[in-house]
Image (tube, rainbow over all chains, first blue to last red):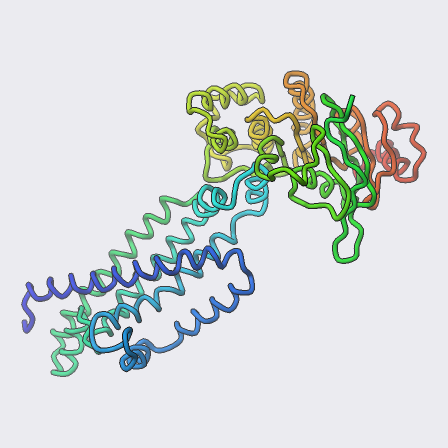
Length: 203
Length: 247
């Protein structure tokens, strides 16, 4: 075997960190934005369209496009995290918007009629009821980011893609697998755990 | 006696269409005023102006003598109970938590809330040990409406708004709920505006009936006077009694 176990573990940790940081940033930016969008139909159309377009750009190309841009671009982890966060944005925001807008009109109506403020409506009614849909978005975001993050190695972002690219360059299948297999395992694990959480909060 | 709730020349226009035309009505302290009318007559719209879910285009609504347009909408709504056709219960909250919504918003002590919730569940015929921990999806249509009524009564509001609360129930459950409502009224003695399209229900529930047609009030009077009403819409409604059809 051309890759040591210790190294696989090390790089896997790096991968988790890459995915975790990007998704966290995407949640931090996307959640408040999504909530604001549920109250503004016109902005909602345009913003979701823009986020959609980002999603259609091939990830390798997006890494390439960002490379020469100062501050956010360049070789390394920072660029990788920004790209990954941009990709995670769509499933997170779309599901949050759909979940909140999907709250039954009669429920919303009676919440308003009982004298809830907008803030109370959001935190006591809309978010709890949208939670399963939001968690589904989080699941899609995390699972797909685990996959996309392997490409980050192309711009020096590290992670399990390092093995994959090295394996391709040296035509060594076992090195490719040392990257691909843990990534797949990670994705399956994340999928299972989040699906469980989704069911747990279903109404 | 000045009226407890007073509509003064209320009009509501949307996109050039008159939904409500020049409505003046008043409601006494312990009175149940039924707003009777067919679909599209404006009765629900009129109801929703009271808790400011809808702002009328012109006219004034006075609640306990004060113009509601000058009051804080949130405070106003917490003093007005609201019951709608399919309950509008929160699916993620238990029966007890649903009833506790307004007391919680009003930051009552947990002890006081628990006590009040139990008292109300008993009053609407849902024994707390059996029902407190259930979720709305585990309830029948009639039980949901009972929770809806308990929830609306929770913070002891002086006024109740009921928008066809029993319309979606089967005839037998509906009959039971109407009787139950009359009992509750005797027990809690509140002013209520009750929207329905069913004359039979209006006669049973109302201390007075206001008949709406095309956004205007066509007739106002007591249930006993209704059979002698001579307006065309009133005659149409009376014919439904003969045939048993609800318009």
